[in-house]
Structure formats: C-alpha cells, structure tokens
Image 1 (tube, rainbow, N blue to C red):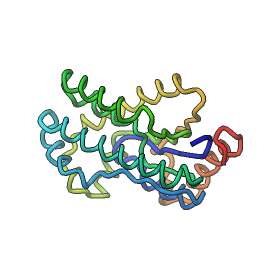
Image 2: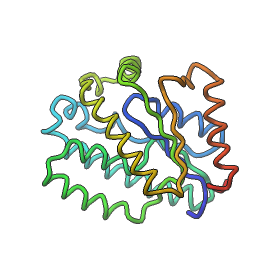
Image 3: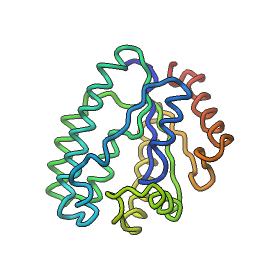
Image 4: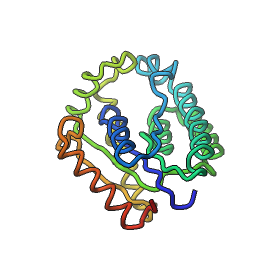
Length: 213
C-alpha cells in the first residue's frame, strides 16, 4: 500500500462515523468503504441478549470486514485510489473484549490475528467521541430497528472502551496521526463551518506528508 492515504473514521455507535466518512470521501475524492451493519442477521438478537448472541455477531462482522479489506486492497489501494472507511478493523477487538466470555474471546482473538495480520490498515484515524446524551439522541433520530434495544449502560461502557482503546492506539502507533473530534461541540451535518474545520484538520495531516497524497 505504501503511503497512499487510507483514513478510518472511528467512534462509538451513533457518533456520526458514516456521515463524516461520506463527506470526507466526497471532499477528497477518495473511495468510501462502509461497514456492513444492518445486514448482520444476529445484531437485533445481540441487543436483546448480548451474552447469548455475541460470538455469532462478532464473527459475522469479522468475516465481512476481512472480505471488504481484501477487496479494498485489490481494487483500490493497489490501483492507487485512496480510501476513507467508516471503521477500523481493530474495532472488532473492542467489542469482542467487552462482550465475549473468556474462552470465546481467546478463540476469537486467534482467528482475528490470523485474518488481519497482513490486511491493509488505515494510516490516519479520525476519532469522533461524544457524551451519552448526544449518542442516544442520534441513535433515536436515525431510528434503526436493530438499534431499538441498545441500553444506555452498554453504550456508556462502549464509549469508555473506545477512549481506552484510542489512548492505547496513540501510544503504540506514534507514526499514525489521530484527529480527535468532540461530537458534542461539532455538528458537521448541520453546520458547514464545523465540516470545514474537520476537512482542514485532515488536509493539514495530508499536506504534512505524514500520509502521502
């Protein structure tokens, strides 16, 4: 892949990852990679009974994201087309560590390592975070059936898991720029100035040569 831009937009459920990814893809003329969410046949059951359906849910996501990254590498990155994705493959481990029993997690981690060790990984991360109230409001507004039973306690814990993950990610990947954005203060869907601010942040890192355009 070299230094071709491959940007991931990450953050907890409802924070606006897909909306921002679409806008960045349009702004920079990058290919947009969207994760499969509602197509996961286990997701609705997962939110009803996390312990019962977590392994099936996470395995579905992992296999589909693996296939997507294979396609992205072959069709776009190797062909010189930059990519912006609304997820980072490492997010699988955030969810798996939180939801799987120990023996399930050990198996899952082994499969994850085998599948992803040579997969292309983003070389810039845009991290969106927001308060629980903001996340719950946005989940209600988009009104997805599969998310109807998300519990605030689960979402709050997930947000903390993301914070812990991103802190560790920044410490262990000092060569990969991370742009942190507060979703409570930025509404890039409604306010063009907020979007312009984010675009300028991304552009600054691209132009620095940290990620070669």
